Each structure stands twice: as structure tokens, then as C-alpha cells.
Picture 1 (cartoon, one colour):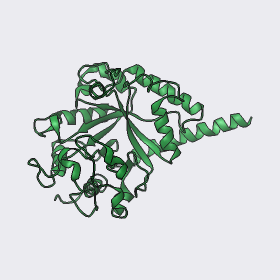
Picture 2: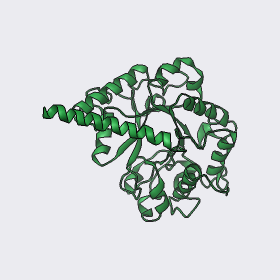
Picture 3: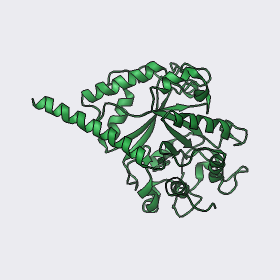
Picture 4: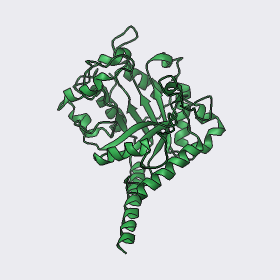
Length: 331
């Protein structure tokens, strides 16, 4: 009897949690603002992606210098030790890199392990940005990496991938490993509009909770007018996603800093160009997450304080004001 009562209480708690989340989306007039804070502290200085991160400014050094962002940021990636008051988290996860990582036994699976780790630290998992990262993985020491079903965008998951992951969540919850029996899976895409224009993607869209598109100020994404992230296809993909009653994450960064391409507030200018062209700005399921890790010329951009409008935290403060507080006169 006690076991049955406990199971019923868990089910009610789970249903209540997801009902409250749905009500929150219905009530708000804007989406979420998130941040991937890197470098967190000296532990990240050993990283080397887009150039060495050794000696790059850290968020740990800005303790006490970002009260506004700490109060109003909605989601954070990979760090619960900063000043941020939110415990809502997002993270990236790559499926199909190595069969042993994708073992569907909840006790062995890397995705389940990641969720369990953050939940044990008090984190609340808001979004899991997931994809098959074949293009990078196959050249970075993962010879068994496998692409998704479409050559136009090899990041896209198979339908079976999503079904397997959902079933695994259910089993992991049943075993007491995870707090919930389901989590939001956001399909990370490589191409800004393929998923919105090819009907073969629709069955996968029906199974995931939304789309995340990465927009960089580097490599093939440059320049904005003609690059990979030019406004028209990005806007097409975002609007199609929202029309499906799904969530869309504009995952913005890394951004440039002092270089021959830089001009003051270029990171804001790109966003304002998107908004003027029609990218939804205030929509409850349209989220803006900053992925401004050290890369290329941007590696030495100051992290803070938030009173410095050119810093990462200053940019985050501006974005929160624009998305959640109706904006203000442009710089």
C-alpha cells in the first residue's frame, strides 16, 4: 500500500511540475534568456577551442559585479557556482558519437549520467540541446561517429533516437535515477531552414520539443548579409518552429572582439538586424541563449562587470532588458 501511495505521489508531482511549466509559457509575454558562462574559472583555461583559453577572463573573477544579470537570467549552462540565482539549466548533448555512450541502460548512459549529476547539485533541467555531431566528431578522434538521416543536415536525429531516449528517461525515472520521466529535447540544427522546408523532417519535429540554431560571428556565418546565418532562412526556420507550437532557441555566439571586422556593439547590431527583418523578439516560446565562449578574436573580451556594456555580462544585461523588459533606446 505504501509503495502504491508513493508511486501516486510521484506521478502527481511530475504532472504538476509539467503543468506548471505549461502555465508559465502561457502567462509570459516573452521567451527565456540564457547564458553559457565561459571561462567559469581557471579550470577552463586548459581548453583549446578556437584558440587557447589560457589566461582568458573568468566569471569567478566577477563575483558581486553582476547583480542585475544574477537576478534576471533565466537559464545557465554548466555552472551552478556563480552568482546566478536561477537553478534552471540547459546543456548540449551529442548522440551517435560512440555506441558505448548511447547504451540505453540508464545506469550506463552518458545523457542520463549528465542529468543525474546536475539534479544532484540542485539543477533543474530546462532544455537539452541534442544532435548528432558527426561532422566535428569524425575528425576529432571518434571514428565510429554516425550522421543523422539527412545529408542536408547531419545533426538531425533519427526518429528512433528520440523514441529510444524518451523510453530511457521513463525507465531511469522508474529506477529512481532521474527526478522526472521526461525532459525537453531541443533538436540542434546545422542548417537554418532545411528542417522547415523538407517534409521528411516533420515526423521528427513531432517528437522533439523544439529547435536550436547556432549563429556565430565566425567562419561560414560571416558576413551576416550573405553568410550561413543570413536573416531570411533563420527567420523562416524560427517562424515555422513557433507555428508548430514548439520552442525555438536562437543560440548566439561566439562573437568577435577587437579585430579588423569589429565595430562597436556589432554583437547588438546583428540581433537588431534580425529583429528588424522579422525574427520574433517577444514570443513566449522564442528563447535567446548566449554562447559567448572564448573563440578567435573574442577570446579576450572582458567578462564583466555588467556596467561595462562591451563585456559579456554587459551584453547579457542589455539582452535581458531587450527581451524581458521591453527594450530601451538603442545605443
